Length: 70
Image 1 (cartoon, one colour):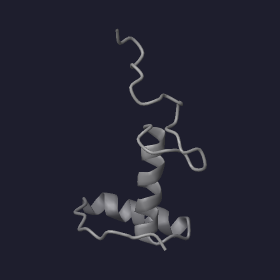
Image 2: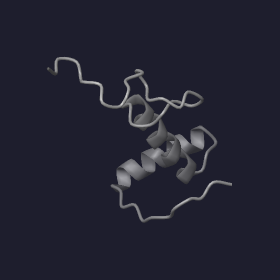
Image 3: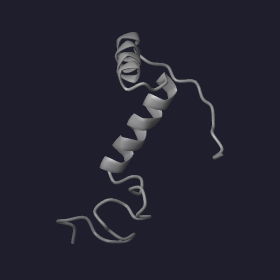
Image 4: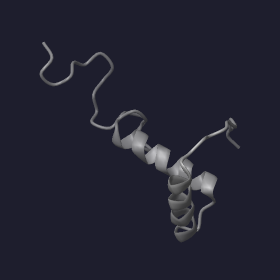
């Protein structure tokens, strides 16, 4: 099993309630829902490799320039 770090998360009560409802709808724990959402956002932002590829989304290699950068 992968090592997991614990930390305290302070959150607006309305956001917490909304995420809790979403977790219930998806049959996940609140913790699993937050983990799922963070992973999804990180992949979408290109900050975490997509599952099974080992590369960042978009395929840009380290050191590649951003579009428009010269």
